[in-house]
Image (cartoon, rainbow, N blue to C red; front, side, top):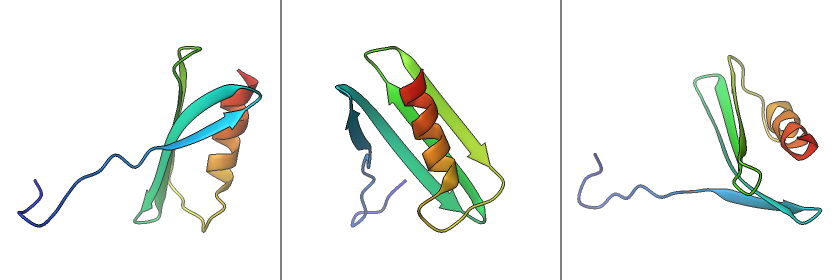
Length: 71
C-alpha cells in the first residue's frame, strides 16, 4: 500500500493499427519480463511471461503485438 506521498497509476499504452485499437502494458524486473495486450472490441487478449529480459525494444513485446494484430 502506498504511503501518504506515493501513488499507484494505471500506465496503459494504446496502439492503433488498421483501425484496430489495443491497450497494452509491459514490464521487467529481476531479469524477467512480461507483456499484456487487450483488444476489447474483438474480445481477445494475449499475456506473455518470460524468464529473460532484454533492453528495449523488446522481442517479447514485438511478438505479442504481431500476434494480437494477426488474430
